[in-house]
Length: 235
Image 1: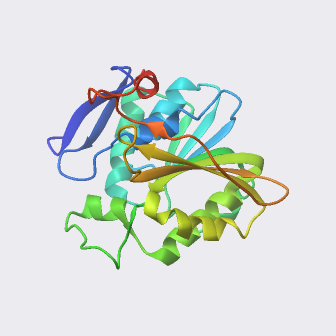
Image 2 (image 1 turned 180 degrees about the horizontal axis):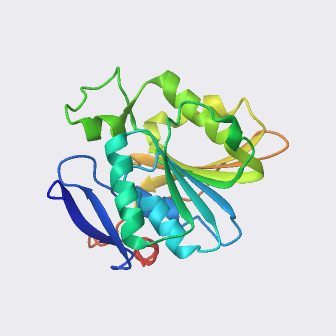
Image 3 (image 1 turned 60 degrees about the horizontal axis):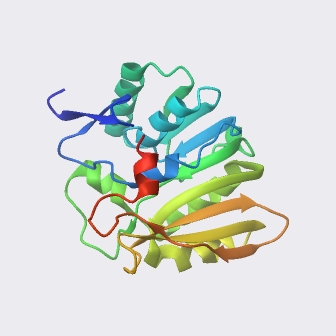
C-alpha cells in the first residue's frame, strides 16, 4: 500500500488510491464523468486506469451499469482496490486491451467515456516509468483501432465523449468521417483566450456524418482557480 497515495474524489465522497510514482489523474476524468446521466443504462469507461471516471459515474448514477476496460494490470489491480473500498455494486473493472474488439459488446453501450493516450509513441521521448508509459503513449494504428472500437461498442443513438490532444483532432476526425456520426469538437482552454492544448469530442451515432464545433470549456478563471462549471463537477 505504500506504493499508493490515498486520495479522494467528489469532496471526499469517494476514496481513490493511485500510484505515488506513476500516472496520476488530472482534470480529464472530472470533465468526462460530468456527461454521464441517469438515462444512460450501460456505460463504458474505456481506458479506465485506476478507476477515477468509473468510480464517479457509478457513485452518481446507481441505476446504471458501469464497466471499466483497462489493459495495464497494475492500474487494474488498483481499480479493483478502489472498487472494494467504495463498495459500488453497479461497477465492474475488466482487464481488456481497448485496441482489440470484443464482439460481446458490439452495439452495447449507451455512453462511452474515454481519455486515450495523448502522444504518438514514435514522435516523442517516452517515459521509462511503466505506468506513465502505458497511459500516455500509443501508436497511430492503435489509436485508430481504439476509436473504431468506441464506434462499434456504441448503441444506435449512443454517445461517446473523448478527450485528447488538440493537435490530434485532425487525425481523429479523418477516422470518424468514415462513419455516420455527429461529431462536436469542444476546445479545452486553461484560461480564457489561451490556445487549446486538449479538446473534447462528442460522438453520436447518426444517419450521416455531421461535424460541429462548440464554445470552449474554460478550466481556470483569472485568479487561477477552477472555473464555476469545473468546480461544480468536482462535487
